[in-house]
Image (cartoon, rainbow, N blue to C red; front, side, top):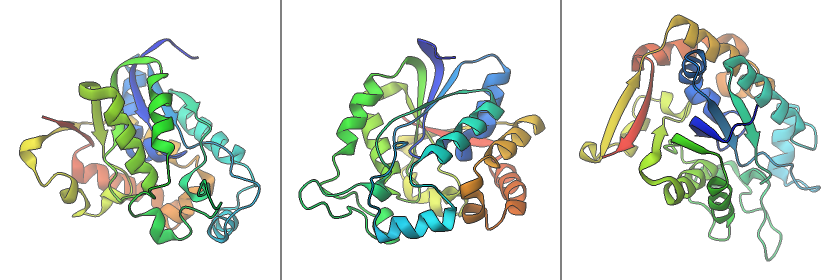
Length: 247
């Protein structure tokens, strides 16, 4: 069901990020009767001609030429949590091309986790998308831990649009490395952390939802059997899930 206003809107760069990172708190909110929307701006279909890197990853993930499979995974995951899902039509950074010469903007794995290409103008489009979203009391964007360019660009666009209504979530699994968060919060006087306790039911819902991403779990967790142990280990270490606000 699509509403005109929500309690919280989670901005998910890709078709799994918000659920991977915030699935427990989403489940808890839905159980309390709060309205939650997950919006993924980079959920559009890839171009007809894929780069060598995209071809390699499609084969590894078992993906069809379009993004329908991944959108369906995201819909199933969000249904597990009891939250609403909406998908944008921009392509993932993996598929975006230079507007002048048509070459891939991000031809290697390393370039996907680096500084956004100066000719990648998608953040401007995402600002417009975000302004058109339903109103909410709170918006959640990724901290961009791990430096994936789409995470950086979603954060950049969200900061231009939402101001003081914006909070940040820790990008999982990148934040699972113990030192990864420090780079983003080394100035503690600028940041305020909020720990969100989770019930056993919340954690179980997060694990079930993550398992809906069939194309991604083997790559992200080195096998489906590791999903629940790794998520539970992280939740125990954090004491639930954690979000951040600028002071």
